[in-house]
Image (cartoon, rainbow, N blue to C red; front, side, top):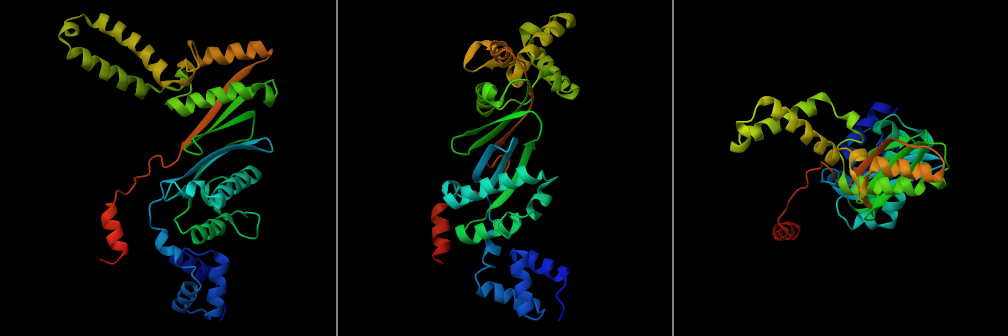
Length: 304
């Protein structure tokens, strides 16, 4: 019986097992889907199906420059312990290498690419699930092909930051500046890189909040609208300093802003440095972690 790509895909979706293993199982089962599932379970491959539903909010955020290409990725696992597993770390670095070599358009494109060992990234991820025994998931990635990128990894992979600079200096010359800016991004997580990026809707919302606060303050409520507007304008300056990277106080030297630090560093090096963009990935960011009672979990495992 001829095995179609559609059959293989259907089995893959049912079991979460890689394409090649699904094709082999279907061939062995002569196209019988139930029999193929049974074969995969007997081989211990379909056991990962149960793991696929479990929440993976730990893992690792990783940033690197590979052959001149700046790459940052996040790969999730279920426990913090696995994030330190050598096989897991190698897989994360391997995913970053695939991104650097191929510049995939999106996550689906990345997962379909060859990992470099005869398997696709999707199949290698599946292999990690089987080897490590947890749900493993490549969650997101970003890269910069132009300019000079500087990576920074905080707390062994809790946060990965990639800073992209436009400069006429060498990567070695701007490394310290890039690292300092990346550390600031990791620590303070600014909403915007520069005040020019703050959209009108955000500004209007801030103004609205400030005006309501003044209306609720007996000392401010009676002041003329013109005075209130002036106060709001002043407070928006504070908003920029708190929320925009380049306008923030530089953590290592609060006598200057990040923008001033970059400019003074460029001058000292005899060149120009401009922050073009940056990416900050924090592992598990936005993933709702399942809270379980530990005693209940143990009892569940013991079948009580």
